[in-house]
View 1 (spheres, rainbow over the protein chains, first blue to last red):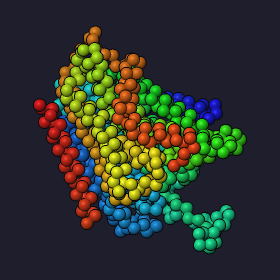
View 2 (view 1 turned 45 degrees about the vertical axis):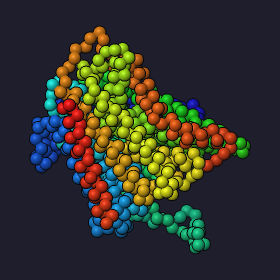
View 3 (view 1 turned 30 degrees about the horizontal axis):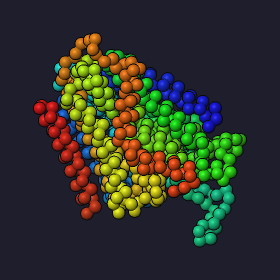
View 4 (view 1 turned 135 degrees about the vertical axis):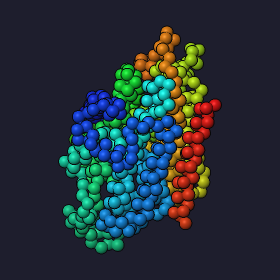
Length: 584
Length: 30
């Protein structure tokens, strides 16, 4: 890691924080129904959608109706993506004539995209038709992200409103998130990516002559290669902005047609964290206290910087086994230096480590390097970031509502310590809110640890593991950490396309998404019904650096208590053994 | 057969999720 590498990471953070403020303010205006510069163009379209769908935008929902709408809308999406995959052989826009997808893989992929996880047990270019990619996956990239944002907005309304029975309209929040935020940003990013060389076409795959002929395994001369193309840029834009992460091609953003240049790499990394960071400002504006948003953003940023520095430092140290052989891993004119196994030469260690932590801090899951090839400590950083519950920025909407559940826990514990009734933004935090927050905080670790236990103890789970020892364990732990927190990134080294992982993974992804959304909406309903308590001398201020530090401590302690034993069996013991020359 | 199995799982999951909504409401009402 050179000074330039650290400078790039610093520049990225600076750009992210600068862009987050105006976007956050804009999103608050959208959700509060205020007029924005996009309304002259999109306003008539919004009203047309309501008329077409028979929705009255002024009709608000109780939290139960809101939750039922979320579930039924997602059920329809799940069935549609499943059917598209099973019927793609009979449907248009399939120039390669790809056959129907198997039922278990169809279920896994449908659950993955509806839950905003985008775990990919398939290779996009060899499995899915253009129609399935566009009408199934890309549409879900938009609406699953918009669903997460809508749930967050319902929770914010719950905090803000007094003695209210309703938390907004899901249909209105869903439409506004998609129309005013996700679509315009995706259009801008897709055009920028195309300008850098990302592909966007409905044409057939292209056959090109090889620059240098070769021979196949049978010894026959090979002079041509088939290059997979397709409508990639439009999917990549929303996969990053919506913290979806599912690549058009199997190797995701390491593919030169998905991520051609250093500029496209920077834009895609910014897109991963932009909306989750901006939503903190949206929260601050909607609760009429910008400092509350800043406190949440500060807590997230401190955690993110700590993990990024740790990951970049570990990767910059290189591989100790190569060092023992006398191989130079120092940065020079000929190499970026550090552990370059599984990384693109054009991105180097800094941009690979930064992407790895950004994609796992957010529940994005896209990748521009192979996380399985990271050093044990370098791989521990993205793994633990997911295990913290995807609240360090997190998914669009879901990251902040997850962090707000931790805030409830933090004010409750602080209240117990000083002997006062806990409050947050004028609302008393009582037993019911704590029960809902406990569900949100504890369901993901339970899913991850039970799933990992199944993966390493059953014959079906063991058959999928391709590495032995602690590295093999890390692969299973990483997979369930990704599935159980709706991240979607893969460590690799695991044969994830089999009935066990397709079924177990699909169920875990659905539980992690919707069994957290329901308690969050219940908490929104409960908070909305309460009266506002005037601030007094005993009120815990939640906008101060002290509270941000307390929140960080609660997130880290819960993450450590839940996962340190499992991490000790995987990356930590591997780190100790690799230092002694033992490889896996 | 495979399709029926997975469609069954999907329906059961969403029915259980609606049950969770009902359970949370009951808990709220005490």
